Image 1 (tube, rainbow, N blue to C red):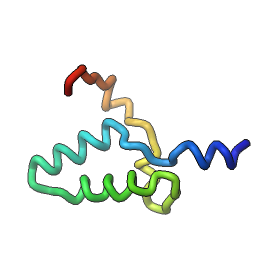
Image 2: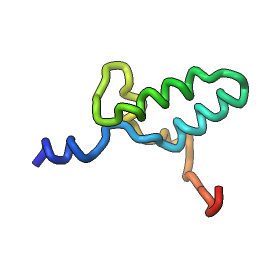
Image 3: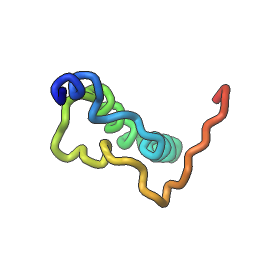
Image 4: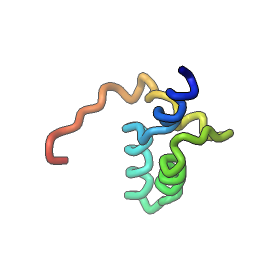
Length: 71
């Protein structure tokens, strides 16, 4: 049922495009995107107004994401 799914499936997950965005900003000295993303994933089951972009898939412009063992 829907309630059981909501209890087990988070609204927010650390999506690759958002992690990359936060890492790029942090590398440039701006920790705000990282801190915001961290706040989002600390409460992944609680839907919040203004956090809609954290529940969306990556834009098509992000392209396929590749990871490698050991990274």
